[in-house]
Amino acid sequence: MSEVIRINQPSVIFDESEGVIVVINLLTGHYFRLGEGTSPLWDLLATGCTFESLVESCRNPEDLVRDWPSIRSELLKHELVVLNVASETNSDGHDAWDYSTFSIEPFTDLEDILGLDPIHEVDPGKGWPHARES
Amino acid sequence: MRIALCEAGALTPEHDAGARADSDLLSGFASLGHTSAVFEENESGMVENLKRFDPDLVLISRPGPFLRLYPEIAQLEKPIGYLAHDLHHRRLELQARILGQRSLSAQVMKTVESFCFTRSDLAILPTHSESIDARAIFPGANVTWMRYFNMQPESMLMPATTPDDFSVKSGLIFVGSSAHQPNLDGVSWFIHDVLPLVQSEVPDATLTVVGHWQEEQIRALTAPGVRFTGQVPGTELSTHMERAAAGISPLRFGAGMKRKTLDYLSRGLPVISSSYGVEGLSFFESEAQSRTDSAAGDATIPGVIISTSTSEWVTSVARLLQSPQLRVRLGIQGRAFVRNSFSQAQYLEDVQRVLAELERAEDE
Image (cartoon, rainbow over all chains, first blue to last red; front, top):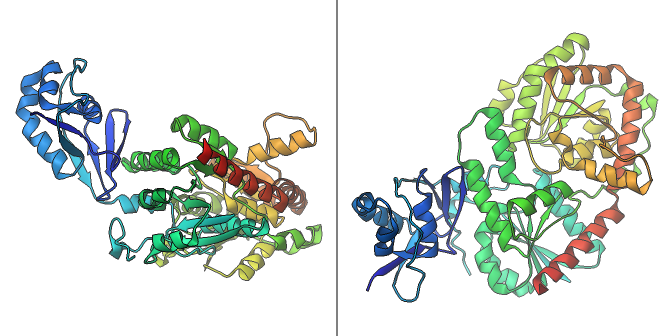
């Protein structure tokens, strides 16, 4: 059985602007910059797909096959994607696409950005998210 | 109705404008007969306490708390409102442009705000214009606006300004802490680029900065005629306001409605401001004009001289400091504007309307 790889939603949220994709993992509080050229692949991951279907629809599959182990590894390491066994998921019939490159840059200063306006400061000792005592 | 207001920490209205807006809201709920409670994110057992409170509605203030708290609070299956305070990502975009920064901050904040606006049942902004923009930026978001400013009763009771008052008033005042980047940038710019030129025309021109600023920032901004008071209690703030000849809002970037501008105006102080310092206020002036059948058109803000370039700022400040008559006229106009557009009755109407919208939003 093939594995379906898809973005780890709803725990992962993202936004694209001028070719740059920012991805936030709400579970870890880390965010990531995906380099220019990553957009077509990220869009396909948003719908969920198998590696085979990615290769099949890719116009330059050799480059994708070469880079895929590290792409898969990086995305899993940062918990940005999840794997499922292929079933009736939308894993086939992608439009043809060009793979150019994949780069991911992690950042850990989300709290600093959120603190740029909200003047309240959350206790930094409690980490992300807060370990609440119930 | 039982309303829960979630914040990152204890409300500190003396520290920041957002907390003052929250405090206004709580007093508004009380005036309308609702029961409300504040839940602080950094308190242990916060969500359990929230459940015990059994709210009819939950409001989460600011993007950080919303992002962190939403997953748990959504499980309560109560209507959730997002108190946005402003479009934060837009302010960060402007900041990056003005300061020549290359940073992902604005895009990261936009991603966060997209989450907040689209997941909440209703997002609430302080200006009409931002609510329109937010609907376009975040498709599918249910967005409304309300006044984030409830004119304080003590301001209403203050006597009308008279020319004699102004003969003893002197100097400029800025109210705000350096923790807010637009304040730090704007005051630094004003002290370095504007004030020395003003003092060449008006040698005794002074600036009093009220609010928390760090020691090293104060050292870097030490200049003739400039005084930092630090954070002061409300009564002392009133004294500083009463002694000042004019308030300034020299913000070179920003978003949302600026309480400091309304604070100055409500106390009868004329204001010199950038366009960012009066953002969103033209809607209220247009609304007031339509109520009185005055001429419509591009609304200026009563009581405010809007200045853009350094030379405009120098001219406006010098002119205002040298003309008690102009200060009186603008002070009276500005105070009337706040009285007419930010009365308690109007504030409570907004609160009631927003609560009804939030209740309705959950049903839809």
